[in-house]
Length: 406
Image (cartoon, rainbow, N blue to C red; front, side, top):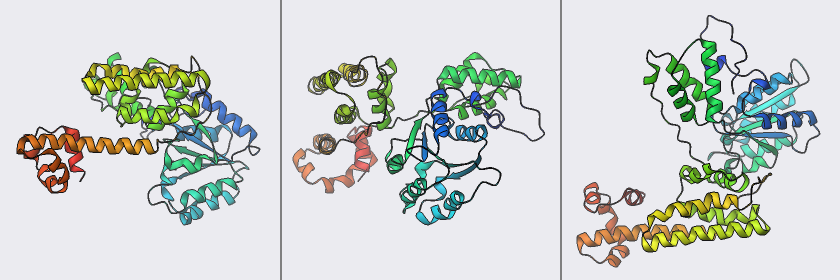
């Protein structure tokens, strides 16, 4: 989200490009038309709305805070910006937020409260902060907007009940590149098309980082030498299954699970648990058939060691299940849940299998029975933590990681 309508006036104090081209109006914001319309509709109806607060979701750098600042400017409201990490308990919440809600605006009757990074309210040290926030929202005479990187995570589960949720869309590389080209024109700078493409792709929708990278690259004598650290975003499992179940099937889904820090077998348990929450009728039958096909290929992989079948397991469990609903989208909010008893059994089996594979390798080297090693695991473990022994046993990285947990 960046304003590039007109070149900013020259000032003595240096401004970063991110600050200089920060949007001032809704029309300056790129790629969020749907979210903007929902926000406009909400504020046209306020206070006659079902929920007294909005929860904006989206990845870091996508422009959640900027959107709220632009909103305040558009509706001419006084903006009070608070960061949720500053009040993790009830006392701090009452001390900092309650007075803001009770005071009238200094300049006009409109007041807008922004609680940034609401994920921070419900950290491990939270002592009543989240419950107090939801109570204050319920009784607030002013609109409140909370932001969170992940609106589907556990941290904001209680907050979601009091908020209308609006998710910001990921900015595409082409949209990012168009924005960067406009900034270069206004700054009178040049970089090669290759550098521009590299920055846009590696940003992965993070406009703030893309603009910072562009400013850094353009300041070099040879911009093509600019090195970028890839922002390898990890998808949350809740967001991943939301994409599969609710968005139209597209080829990008084939690589979605690569971004989830979770084995494919475990992901399939999540898929199995949540299919009935979204699908029904014939589409439900088709989805389960495709999950069964994925499981069939998984069995062949394990029994026959045909690892080339892994691609088919992935196709059926991602694109295949998404396409089971046809060429449609699933609108609305669905309560996705983690698998229960089956997941516990699976995790225990995985744990046992890892220990068994290590015991087999150790047995071959020491000529001690594998069953005895399994039985006396606690006594064997200190030896296995020795790097030299790990090297002799030719342990895999995941086996070493398993050992070092203890």
